[in-house]
Length: 55
Image (tube, rainbow, N blue to C red; front, side, top):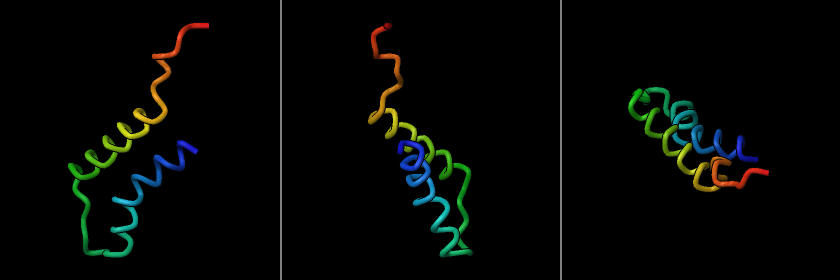
């Protein structure tokens, strides 16, 4: 489920607008910002695993 959410966050801002509006370009800066925010969102929700005690 996390992978689907991650890809959904990215495609919602990068893929679909480019598909619907072909004249619209996505800059590398916009791509970086969208991916960084998607990563931050997933880490906030699912964590990194580093906060779990060793078993």
